[in-house]
Image 1 (cartoon, one colour):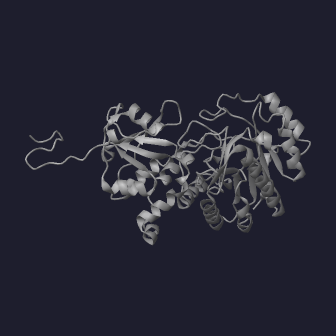
Image 2 (tube, rainbow, N blue to C red):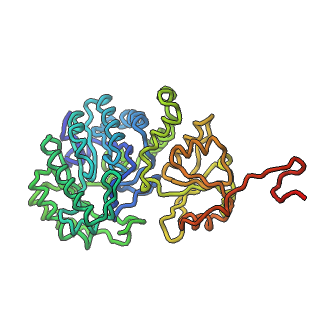
Image 3 (cartoon, helix red, strand yellow):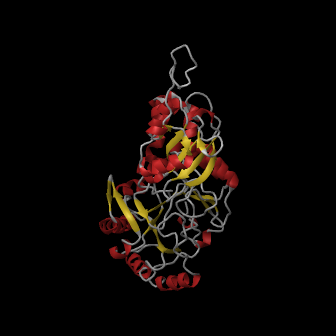
Length: 439
């Protein structure tokens, strides 16, 4: 195991050695004003984006294919799309499995540092060699402009007090990692008008703490974030700040803003074949041997526990025959429209093709994984089996008939949908039970 073969920590290695990020951590414990975490977004290359989410077992199956296709892979990392330690159990299970199967592989995590401290000894025990922490400010007044909230366990804290807690945890994390001889890279997002006059101070503090490398990452305009209208900082400003920060700590100058499912060399284009394999493994049913240990529904629910964070499930899925009405039963749908309610008018994100139904409950678990970033399903009808299975995994299902835009606006506003619910029809035996009443 050569610690210098990490392409992000060592520029000399980035042309020879690759990395793979396993997207097993969907939930996040902070909300950055520059971030909008959307899954299934294949046209963006930035942190927080992934085409699919994997369970630890699925991640291992996918990793085997990556290693076969990319034998120069030297690093297995977990970088979200949320935070690894807002999903600590899944993260550590995955890293332990990787260490057992690939003892020479470098292990790496990228985190905001909020909740890493309880896992420091565990990370050291499995020889995690590299950790990246994103620290955007060391002055709470600056930090309060960057974050909307911080979550500590089940408690959400506003930016003023939340940033103080976050900064304390981050500095403790850097100190704890260095004490354990784990290499540390600190990322700082350069936000024009917010921290451009402060970022060198961050570098100075990180130099005092013996951070190994410092990465000034210029903000990339992210649609849907609070800072979506902020412009990307110019190259001259980035160069100037790196030169000033170099006085205190070595600089990373070759960052590629990696996705949470990045694979290959840093300069490699997106690998369509491996992305398809990642999606395949993300929709592969849980092995029967595992399901039999818990009972299938419990085993499936375990894979969805990480999606309880509302930020990880921002969308609504609906079934329509012609694109104007919610008028199709779930069992007949071959595709679902995915909508984002987080706008003044609900916005269509994409049309998502559903997997083949499969046999028994497996078909509904496959469907669930396909729309795992959704919290609500709107259809004109659904059977007892899918309603039971999908409800267990945290989906809310409404059987409604109505115009798509009207139903979505009612849902967005929290208005009652009772007048839109599909009523079960009854028959006296002498008519067809059309619901018009008997005379």
